[in-house]
Image (cartoon, rainbow, N blue to C red; front, side, top):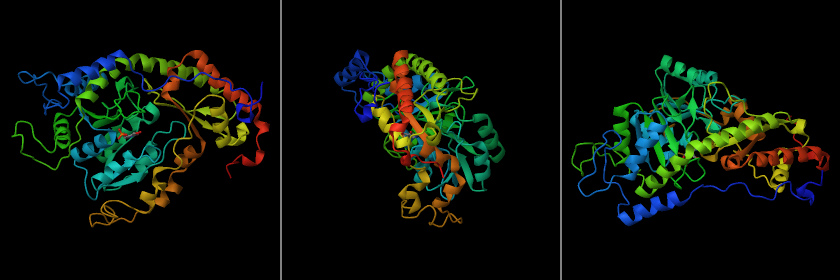
Length: 436
Ligand SMILES: Cc1ncc(COP(=O)(O)O)c(C=O)c1O
């Protein structure tokens, strides 16, 4: 094989992977239609639970149409669109009645929003380690983290693969806890044939730019509980209540609404999802088979209950001593070969300065504002979460857009990795982390 690209050789691949977002004339027409209609904003509060006919002279709301279509596609009765996935989590916890003094169990290997949602309602996030084979929250660690203050669990269907919902639902039932599925990566994903977001008390989705369906920003809550849906919608609509006067506000809500432009784009993105998901799955299966044969490369395990993986990310663990190159050198070499790749999170969530300093709002609250009587030292979670620590050291992420390419492009990924392994002695051995 020729020299590695990082040392001046020709790259394995010169062609770019598909770009993201994927869009076409459909999205273009959808945006233009909203633009020209002048209806950029949805007046129709209450449509999450009551499919109202548009008022005389008003077109049907794109957001109302989208939230219904998306909920249906995930197998949930109700869909409540909102501004983003962060807001979806905050609102759901509020609607579930989680509040000051309560604890919410979350994984430490996820985006910050999963853990800031409890803080937004003045509850306390408690971290439970992940399973190292799937990167999803480990039910046994959840069970160990439960205290009389625990009110909810937020499992993340990480990278688009369902968490172990049987075990989690069982634990939740025994301890009377709410389960909020963070399905920000789970568009079109299923667990035992059931749509992600339709299994727990509620599910939350994100349509931010990197996600498998996007309008730049956007979020949505799914639930089968009508009362919960109505409450969520009220929190998103400034505390308004169905059937009450427009300027009457029943509870403390915010403006977390989605615009008609976003609704129109997302309706078109939803039409693309099934074919895209099938392509991602086919290519991921191929990569699993090829990459698992290489030394030091271990794709995440896909348990049987994952009947539909959304593959927001394709992840494998990289074992430095087995491969013979440090992960940072590997990532730089792979990128130079024309395969973009990421290290993922640099550290688990509890190691963020905001947790170490408890820089919450108001400062220190909810841990210090009188409702809570347990001392929490977030630095101590390091000892409790060895798998999250290891995931931060060993993960390699590929993006879902790369899985939208063709079979020969997957071969390029495999060949680039094989090439780096073949040339492993070209790297300084001193940089390999032996994991001591
Ligand atoms: C697991 C997870 N939860 C929640 C969110 C928050 O979504 P948003 O960026 O739409 O606020 C994200 C976004 O990256 C995420 O990855």
